[in-house]
Image 1 (cartoon, helix red, strand yellow):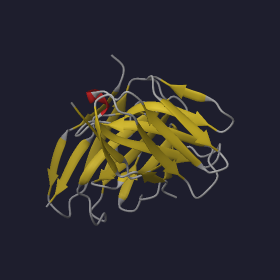
Image 2: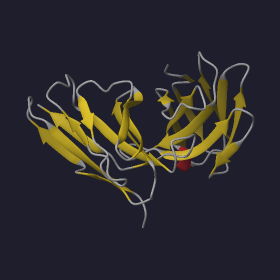
Image 3: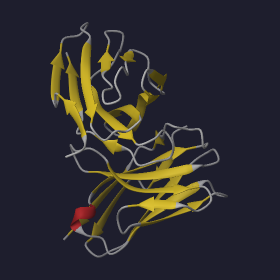
Length: 113
Length: 111
């Protein structure tokens, strides 16, 4: 079955540690996205990538980093510079980076204490 | 800029209708609607494009008013499965690859 996988579903880290969230898709989609979701805030874009080896900052990129070395993978690193990292993180992909349906993964809930 | 959704929350009885609005302060190129159930990933409902094109998977209707810079999602004869949070995501240009999402509208359908 095609889809997007994110792992792990729940992640706990100590403050000051970097952590990498995994996102893999087997839909052969060109574009991939990372969103952060906080209660009552909707979805806020962190980074997006239109094609391999290319990515752009979204609205809240500070304290995050990404890479896109393979078409199917778009990992997100939450660095210690991110002041409020505890949130629900969603990865998505679309066939092209134009107005197209975005398919979302199941999400990773990160808790930093 | 983040679009404004209204209402913030609505409670319906099964079979009733509801309208969810999404307004932008800038000209719209496309509006995307998603539904999210608690603890799950958002699921695509519909895309509306400037010029009138629509793409959708479900029997849900929506409108796109370019002049008013807003879109409305119409949920008719609501079913229990319609419960969830509805998000609109907007793009203000045809080169806008990323979407700005609203804060969501919580919909609860009761028996």
